[in-house]
Image (cartoon, rainbow, N blue to C red; front, side, top):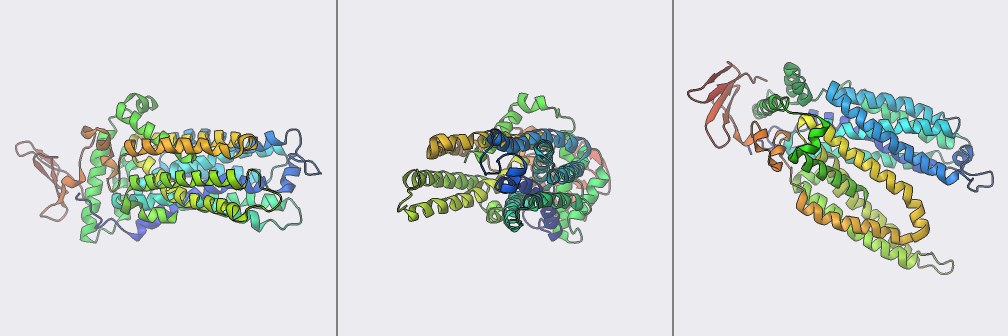
Length: 495
């Protein structure tokens, strides 16, 4: 490919993508903080989940399920709303929307004066959090260079894990408060801070040049590409020119295509991508840093296959250990070695899950779709995750109470089948520009320019564009004309 790694790395671009990905903390923290909140006796008492003696009330179990469920339900609405906003007003508008809802809901969840108020604003918190989960992979993928998109956009999974970790740590930090409401209001209040992170990022993060081109704002898109690269350096100037030219030509074509939801399921190649995204997202729930560093080196497919295979093996071992040594745990002389091994296996599982599933899931699903369908494609991904999580959360407590370790067999079976499906269904996208992904699904005519056909011209500011497997055309910023006799097209691509 002509787009090698020369000219693709800049600290500026890395920092911008990192700041965008930090918005995922606004998902991970609120999604996980409910776990530590439900472990707080003052909270359970205040919300009438348990009585003064610490026993569950008649509605206690139902309330616990609702407190988790409304978050996912709100997420489904948030995903649809932010998808519309991203397509209509841009990626930055989507960030503004989810941040605003996050600030509003986070404040009122913390200030809840009863269970009804808590459930209502927990619903809105789900809107904001799942909306953030939808927009940040799209935004970061569209700003990342092809050769390092896995690393730059893979930080989404890392930041989700950071959010999970912060929630756990804050649960411990507010543990010793003398039984006051600060024990549970404190961790909930911090969600507001994490909603401020993506809001503050708008001061330094540019709009996606791909969205700007789709909106017909060519000069603004060109200015963003120039901002992302140090065009005073020859190699990077050439890359920036070639990248912008490819994006511009592709956007001109994409604007002529149908971008409706119906197209997602009626056009064969789009439907195939939707199935892959939904299937991968479902399997990710039916089963970080390291992962984001190596994803561009080993590729998406190998990392995903390693992740699912590792999760499958550790699930099998976990189920066997729990069945043997903890069903139930003997009151006299329990086998502590076996029990500790079961706990250790959960940590090993998390290594495989974080490295091979959570890190590649978000950039992979975001990059499969063309620009005019990317927001909708990502919505399918996050909606599938939300709905799958909702189902498993609702049935998990009942399943473990009734069938114990055998519930693991559900996940083992699904993961085993899914591993085979992934091997045959998922294409490799590593290093490809977003504009060329369509060719992997048979839409070769939808790719306007291939990066391997873009070469440096003999003059400054000039690119030589080969017609894929045919003639050549010269692209020069000094004029705009088409010479039909020589099949050479000269257009403005100055950066």
